[in-house]
Image 1 (cartoon, rainbow, N blue to C red):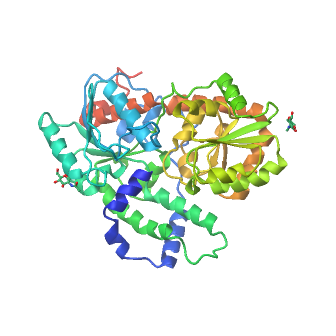
Image 2: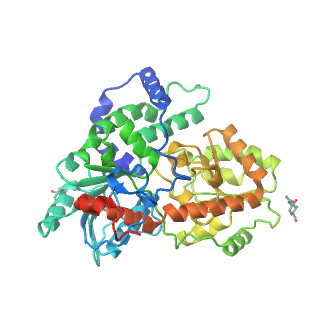
Image 3: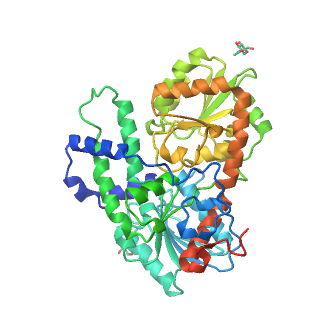
Length: 480
Ligand SMILES: *[C@@H]1O[C@H](CO)[C@@H](O)[C@H](O)[C@H]1NC(C)=O
Ligand SMILES: *[C@@H]1O[C@H](CO)[C@@H](O)[C@H](O)[C@H]1NC(C)=O
């Protein structure tokens, strides 16, 4: 997500931008790439029982989260490079993910050394809690100073070598990764998928091509994609957070299959639970009348690339036909004021406390995520599912191949107003009862795949397998 984007910008992109494609060549090239048909994910997830898998884990073509790993009897020493580490209350998705994962691995007794900077960019002491060690190695701009990080890395490594190195996207840059033998990278967003986003954003913001030429970011996408394809082999192993990204890494980036793995992100399932009473209270508190026919909700930063122009336009025509449908908008940003203009059926709640998020999801009949960023796995979709809510979201390959893998989980649409309105109409036609049932299926799906403990045990087994191929066999006698 933001992570990859940013460090990239600071690093090697300048020389690439020197050679420019003509806009025409770019468009032909991207059309070609998008028209190449390939399946989203090696196998359909839903209805396929992977729990009976028997073989070498490096050959799996499905998320490791499907499997049930027993306890580990060997302790690992891992080095981790992460762009930031959350020190304040409301961390973004990427930071929340990193913290959840490494705290879980440390709690399992593994020695975790994290090289990073504080998310607030201020000065903080290093953290040493049990076997979790966080080293803040910032340069003048507040981002990771790689030389400084490696000084500490080498010192810790001299006390007993690391078993494996893990980097969250390009936190460990590729020219450094080349010098490290055992490094696995988790990709939270790849340019092939970012290019997708930019294409949709261009089509939405410039539908009749009245503006001259495509936006700069779209023009820059192709050279960046080429660059990625060239430098990705600098990392030894690759972990993707969706089936689609893994497919792209094998088929477009041409990485060897056995070096590409899927481990889905998980959220703390104890924080997001189904609770209708809490939900009803939340509705009351925010003035949703008891006779509301359906309550929809959207959460996150209210900015353009999270799809708010799309939802705003779709909902403003839709609400005239369906005055009983309410929309709860959680979050802050420039689009908050626009939503408030839509009348009393739209409630703009402002930014919610993390503790209120679960209550918010529980107040809904359906969770809407209109994102224009098809890369990565949006944690909000997963959180809503854990609370037993179906979702309404664009039909991007990363989403339909991994999260909303069947109509039983909700509704998907193409990222344009017409298709969005059509999906909203379907929600109304189905009604609250049917949404409730879909929500139950969502909950089962989320609990079986997207939990923090499933994610942590998959990563644990992954690093064990990288250290000692004995652990690559599945099932082991100790597995469940
Ligand atoms: C990064 O760390 C190295 C080694 O400690 C130091 O010499 C250098 O000045 C630092 N660079 C920045 C930009 O802070
Ligand atoms: C809900 O109730 C309010 C007042 O009790 C009424 O004005 C409104 O029309 C009702 N809405 C629907 C959709 O029935």
